[in-house]
Length: 346
Image 1 (cartoon, rainbow, N blue to C red):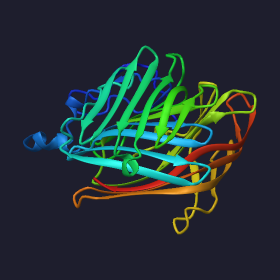
Image 2 (spheres, rainbow, N blue to C red; image 1 turned 180 degrees about the vertical axis):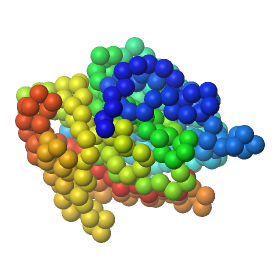
Image 3 (cartoon, one colour; image 1 turned 120 degrees about the vertical axis):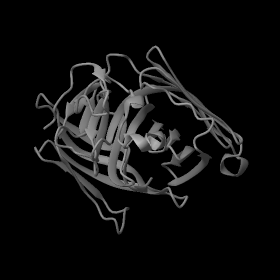
């Protein structure tokens, strides 16, 4: 378990099989989705409707969470932006569903290329160039016309490690995902009449870059956080479970000062009857012991008959300890992040 990939190459073989399975500290595999072959040849033209691609960016400031996503789900595109105020526990979200993802551009690679959508009164754009990621959002009608604008740059040095995982799901279905935590953020974010200047010494961003093919019915848990320790080092969490064949690797890790500290299986202990109860996270090796105190439960539901999705994304604060690879005990006290439960039929 926890097989680490170190050899670059294509994601898929010419016959549509995963060329390698496991996790890596850098994105080593070329995302050649054109070689996917999970349907019989006579149905191959329909494959594009089952391939999912998304770029999900998040920014943590001392008092606010901001997120923007551009996704192509095959049947439809989904573009959405939301923000959470940690002081008032209020959040607002706006989204667009675009038939067959018309007008959506997403890059082939997580390291370069642009993602973009403009239309229906909104513009969302992500640009990647030379170790920096630029987020640009203009949505005048957001929150009843109060509007939201963002011009944010995230620093991502090439040497910084990130969690990349490649796992089979069923047959020739698969998940190729890269999570980048703790990218220093600078720029401006305006929500309604409130404008915030982002200080990279206090604000950080993260990326969830996903490509793959899922069964029609899917379920997963994901937990993430990015912030700072008392000594000034960056600290990130990425924990997940719920779908796919995880015998080769999980995506569980702690990111300390830009370096991955790999974890094995992690237990999510929470109540689906009350997501606002304290969550508990522990691992199979005794290296992770965290409590998660919720602040607000963001409920996002989509029902397009063929496509349905229900997410409880709970924002709160992590406290406890984690043991780094070298044995250092890291104390976490009030680290802002989220933990979610997601059910999808897509």
